[in-house]
Length: 99
Image (tube, rainbow, N blue to C red; front, side, top):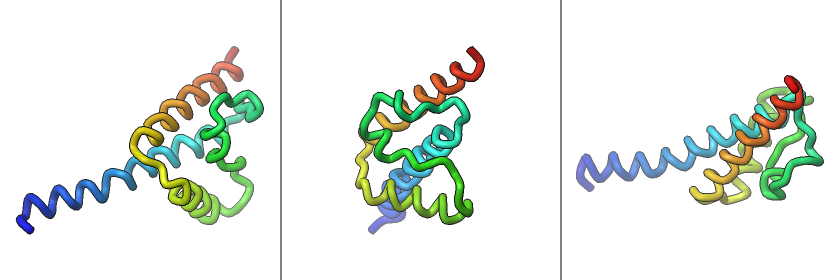
């Protein structure tokens, strides 16, 4: 395999993990937002993947969330959908607190 071929293969392997990390970050922010009302989340997929508020050791919390996302076998469009939905729910939660 050529050098550029290896770089492309490496980038492809990195990209999904990077997107999952971004999604995990958004889900953590949403799950621990003071303005979140879980019963008002419209997306069943988002609600299913949303972790509980952090009550356990942070390393275990992070590992559990990563495992949940890995087990869900999300493709690119689903990750994009969940990212957008999580950001929308964070904005709604913020509005609840400031409104």
